[in-house]
Image (cartoon, rainbow, N blue to C red; front, side):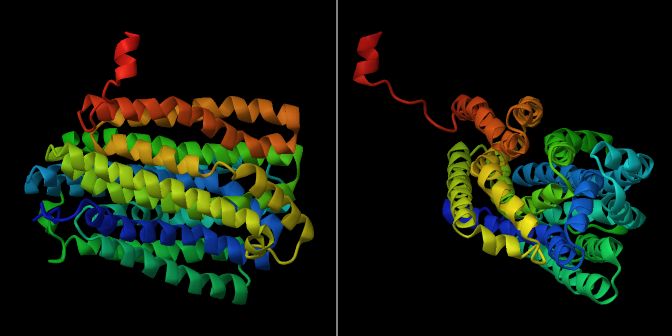
Amino acid sequence: MTTFHADSSITRTFWRYAIPSIAAMVVSGLYQIIDGIFVGHYIGFEGLAGINMAWPAICILGAIGVMVGMGTGSVMSIYRGENKLEKTKVALTTGFWLLAILSIIAITCIVLLAKDILLAQGAEGQNFAYAMDYINVLMFGGFFTACATALPMLVRNDESPNVATFLLVIGALINIVLDYVFIGVMGLGLSGAALATLLAQACVTVLGIGYFFTQRSSIQITSKEVLFSWNKAKQSLSLGSSALVMYLYGSFVVAMHNALMMHYGSATTVGAYAIVGYLFMLYYLLAQGIAEGAQPPISYYFGARENKKVYQIFKIALKWVVITGIGWVTILNISPELTTALFTNGDKALIAETIVGIRYHLFAMFLDGMIVLITIYFLSVNEGKKAMVISISNIVIQLPFLLILPKWFGIDGVWLAMPVSNIALIICIAPMVWNHLKTQKIIKPLPLTSTSVMSH
């Protein structure tokens, strides 16, 4: 049943999963990016600020999708590596139940806390109204938001990376068309943007769940096999919890930045931060696609005890995460006006603020890719606790910089907080992954040189 053939080259195996995964992640990001383009052109900076302030609330559902998708996907791949088909099926269907149960809980929390979340970020006037419009519409189908995030990951772990990409492409195309109709033609504002996203995600959900009941799925299930297992649920949640924390951490960081931007700047600054976020998202999703593409083969080879191949896959992924990050930073700094123009209607103040954000906020962007890759590596080798440590450390390290730097440097300090904290974090976690590779004998320890022998 497996496609990890012994005679396949490691590079070919990596790219077979990485390319569809990269495409899937980048396409999935188009939901937010396309919304941003239409909102920026048809509504302006107040709309961009509103959608950015709504994001920390909405992303609770996305976080659930990532947790179930990554956690259940890892469990599925590990069982597949051990040739345990029935356990793979139970892990999958347990994931379905988790999506339903956790979505209901999340929607309830968001409805109750939405206003408080927005007010805590400094939302006011028009941007507050826009944000509430966006949240209210999406809450009618929050289940689809979680499922549309998780299902492509689960499909990819069922040896169908191309199908996973197809799901997201279909969703993105529907979103583009409906954004134009609802925002550009009908003038529904952020309510239209939310409705377009919701309908696209509903389509992905129906097609994604339906796939597992067809013969295209290598672990085809029937309605009688949609079972729930507490043990599989605990295993999935344990492995996926670090991904949940990382996602929620991302939303918390956005909320903190929004609040500080409003305090030290204005709604225009928050709008600029939204645009910088969209530009950052293009790289981050690409890096996450590389990391998630590496996850199935790493999990499989780890389950099969082929440690050398685990290291080779990780090394290839790390190289491309760094290369693409540095490349995107270079492009953004060479032509910031061109990239910014995609999200504005000619607002000069908004463009100027955005260029400052590109210079200060994104200069160490490639480190974000390294951090997500290392986190997913630990998740892939059944080291959920270490992945969780990294996720929590990310929060603990960044908070002091967010609180201190703005007091010294004003709005520039807000822009600089994330890259400076990432430099500190990577210094801490790089030895962690290196020591794990050595401990598991995935890599050989460095040989003693004659100089080192003599020094002892």
